[in-house]
Image 1 (cartoon, helix red, strand yellow):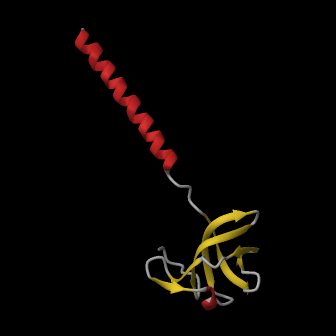
Image 2 (cartoon, rainbow, N blue to C red; image 1 turned 180 degrees about the horizontal axis):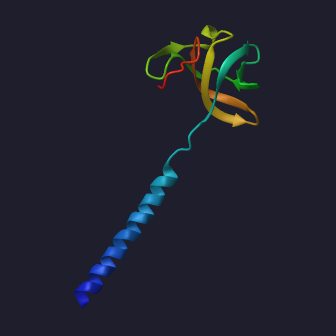
Image 3 (cartoon, one colour; image 1 turned 45 degrees about the vertical axis):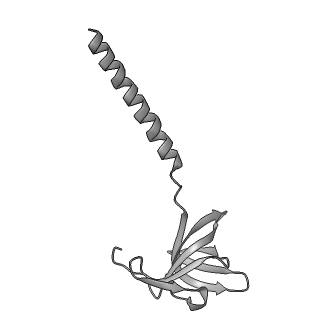
Length: 118
């Protein structure tokens, strides 16, 4: 009888520790960055903004001097800069929304939207 009680107590303790550690690890995970993508409608280098259009909606992306630009696809890209970006190209950017504008930390650009799964 004592052996069953001790085994049951040990099992409950193990489950309690596993739940506590699991929730602590879940809290430590970083939140995913916000994302905005679309066809480039305009680039205003003096204001450091890129206007993209997706469907009928136009949104603005704000880039900084430390925003990382790459040209190509997710699997095949090369370092780039905003100077290579042109109207009509496709931009996919990650960062943080401030109101309805995205302040970008990184952008992937390409001549046209890739319709295949990456």
